[in-house]
Image (cartoon, rainbow, N blue to C red; front, side):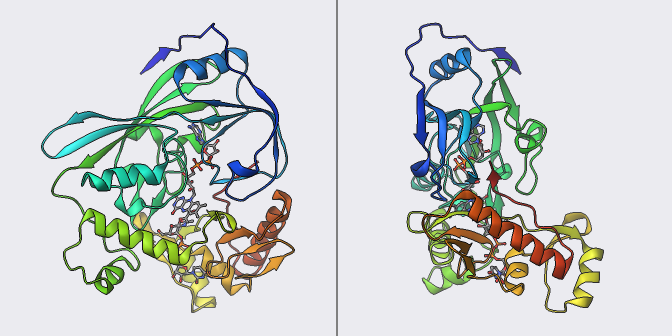
Length: 347
Ligand code: FAD
Ligand code: EPU
């Protein structure tokens, strides 16, 4: 479904010049935007689009590595709002403004006992960026609760609704990371959450163990959210303390038969089974086996507890992080003949 964007001709927004992005990215990289603006509604966005097409859309900056200053216009998405647009006794459809903080929306849902996103607690960033890579954690992916999104085509200045199947969601992937990369500005996302008969997902990793340790034998939405928050806080570095963007690379996915060939050479190697005879290999393990866990070059390195998370120990430039990433790719490739692909958006 498409409609034409009303172009706002009452210009009142200012585009700022030469703005530091240091506090706008969780890696803590001091890159500059040649031009910068923030938009919080469709009128402001249409006004910007009538002047020029943005060169980069910024959400919470938690999945981006700036390796240089951004030439052109960075537009930060501040669209707000949470609206129940459909409801029956079992389900609720909630439309979230794309600039809302993801984790705060999870807590909002948990508070109301709306189920479906509790396993995605504590993922940084905005609602609007969540479909870009189909965020996932602890056995759940966004696509399981995703109904639709609204987005503005920045060149054509038209508004389009994308339903779930049109987003071509995959593991850390969607149409917005591929065919439609940098073409659409997502303004809202609608999720379908359960009001009862919640499909609780406790099977992944240490969720069950964490629940047991806290004496919980009949888990709820809230107790799962709390368990995920506790596990994540113990494993992943807090970007407020040490710059990072979560997993830097995706976990490589190979055919199970290719994995078995590799495992014959490296008997300790393990994988997670995927549909259609594919296998996902933990990149953190591969990187650790190459001696990179906790290693650093100057101010850039990998986290001491999670080798898949590249970190800025303070003052590193984007290029310093990228150098570490290249070295890791080389090391893993020469030992395992696997090319790690970045999850983070590198600019
Ligand atoms: P940004 O980093 O600002 O942008 C990411 C990309 O999306 C960019 O290409 C940007 O241009 C584009 N974009 C942003 N907003 C819009 C919009 N409105 N319209 C169009 N394009 C847009 N991810 C997971 O999947 N699972 C995890 O468990 C996880 N854990 C993390 C833990 C930590 C500590 C950190 C720092 C990151 C983690 N991430 C995880 C990655 C990150 O949180 C997600 O990818 C998140 O969705 C990024 O949101 P953001 O608003 O910060 O996006
Ligand atoms: N591992 C090691 N050494 C390490 C790190 C991990 O051996 O240094 C092993 C672990 O022991 C475990 C396996 O690798 O057996 C997997 O590790 P973990 O459970 O920490 O998860 P991950 O595969 O590293 C993925 C996602 C995370 C998500 C968690 C939980 C990707 C690229 N990363 O990490 O997402 O939070 O699972 O579901 O899929 C992100 O995308 O930014 C992110 C943090």
